[in-house]
Length: 168
Image (tube, rainbow, N blue to C red):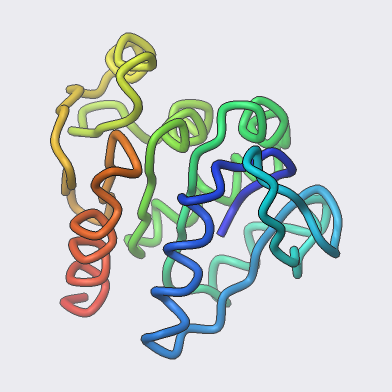
């Protein structure tokens, strides 16, 4: 899971616990190891520092979650190595579950051109300017990418992403 201090609490906590239910080991990447806080005050323990992420890590992970949190992503999307990792992860064909402002990471990683994607309504133009077709639907599936506009739809979004993962 790729995030940063100031993450959208619901969009980190729900997928983290839901993936634990399916016996996934969840690593949370952030600016540094240790506890980080969401915009609503929850805390999670980051297990991986962004500066240590390389494309070689693509082989170590099977499923990528990119939660939202506009303030968190303003900082995270400036990490070139993280963007390179997303590009390589996407090229591997492994499942990417992206929600809300998480689509900004896909835009910066330049993986949306020619695809269907969703994200928070305020970044619709950004998604379209990246070459994607914006779809305002609870779980938009395009190949290995499953995107969602808002945490109101997290259950259907993550179910669709897990279905894609298990079908691969």
